[in-house]
Amino acid sequence: MGAAPLASWGGRTLALLATALVVLAALGAVVYSNYGHKPVRLVATTTTSLYSTGLLDYLADKFHEEHPDVTVEFIAVGSGEALRRAEMGDACMVLVHAPSLEREYMEKGVIGEGAIFAYNYFVIAGPPGDPAGVRGAGSAVGAFKAIYQAGEEGRAVFLSRGDNSGTHVRELMLWRRAGLDPSGRPWYKETGQGMAQTLVMASEMGAYTLSDIGTFLKLKKDGRIPGLEVLYSNSTELINVYSVYIVNSCKGRERKAAEEFRDFILTHQDLIEYYGVQEYGQPLFHAARGREDYLRAAWMELAGG
Image 1: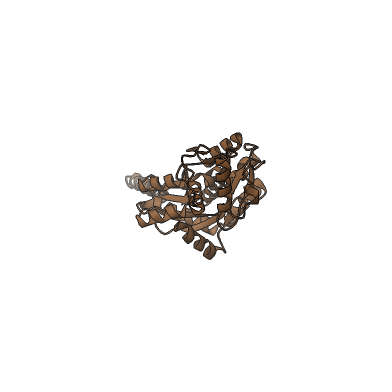
Image 2 (image 1 turned 45 degrees about the vertical axis):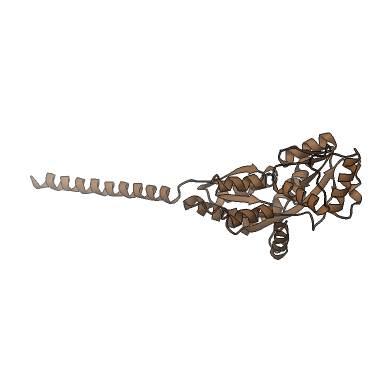
């Protein structure tokens, strides 16, 4: 009679041990899973044109579908500020369009070798009446010369972002190539604002300004810049090249996430043009794929100032 209870007790013990092992295994799997897929916050500094058009949020959402453990957060500022913040350790990734500044920060060791992923064009926007005659210019430099002359004659105002952004850097390059220095002239005004704010101010003031085409088209569609038209653009002086970089000081899982997001952008270039067509009826940006050599040559020229 004593053996049956003992056997029963032994069976219950074995059952409890088996259950405990199953529970421990499950907990171990959860711990391993959470460790292997710990949520990552990837911080990227970026030029305002990529962000304000909605392109980067669109790409980040698509990336998140494939990498649900990674959340990408953007700090949208001018290219110069984006690179400066990267140097301060505030970001792991940089997406910018100022080759001369990019080269400077590469030489300083802040960012590694970049990859060109998109391009579009700058445009000279201004009032429909075009008092400076920009529409008839034979080049972007010629258009800037016409604006300078009209400004000196009291017929035109030019708004500069004045913020060391990629757009501002290109504007200054065009003034240099024209052999002119508008700083301090009463008709030349610096906004210290992003592209969207500068365009709205130019529309209200009937002023000229330099803009990336993407931001211009978005604001035009939204009805925010009724007083502006695209008056001049070309595919040489005004080409606008966008590159992505990983910050050298970034390490660990965030760096891996940055590399994954960079690779996603480079391998899903169809999304870049599709976004503009879907939202605005035309591309705001063109994918770099297939034009890498041409764009690299343009980048090299622009990096030299």
